[in-house]
Image (cartoon, rainbow, N blue to C red; front, side, top):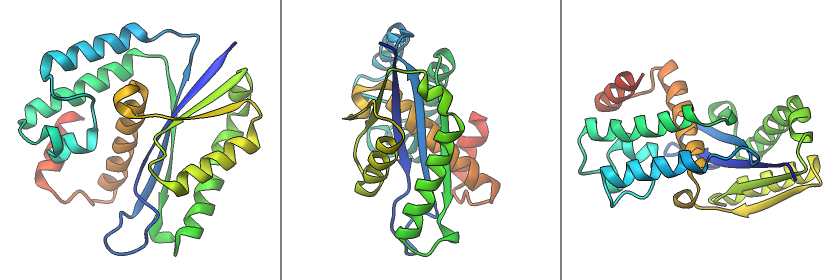
Length: 210
């Protein structure tokens, strides 16, 4: 059986006030399960264990902001983690796309849900031949946001009869970490294009990584 794994992560939320992010981004990472990447994943885990045993997985946002388990690391040490994930991504055969919604052009969560649903459906329709080449589609998401969970279930159930949904945590799936990494880079790219990167340290981190 030819199965397609889809790993999904998001940045932003469905709130509308001054404290909520202006962008809502959803990233989809696709992997053909017939292509074995277990050795790549093992190498990534070995490198992480060698660097710092207390860090279970790479979470790019906290790495950049020096938060959580990364708060005691220098900027060079944190960059090394970003490089490890970037090298891992470049070593594996995956496809991906992101849907970027600027909430400043919307008024409420109903409009956001509608816009997001339309954009995701358009992306799927554009690549429908790719999806139809698989006997089974497995969607991995941590169900962190009820609104997005509902949208994903509705869209994939309408488009495909061979879809299965699984709740997943990033520490257990390297490709969920990849989705997080790409999603965060997409957010930073959009903010940088609009000169919205306020922190000098953040700008330094991004410029050095590029």
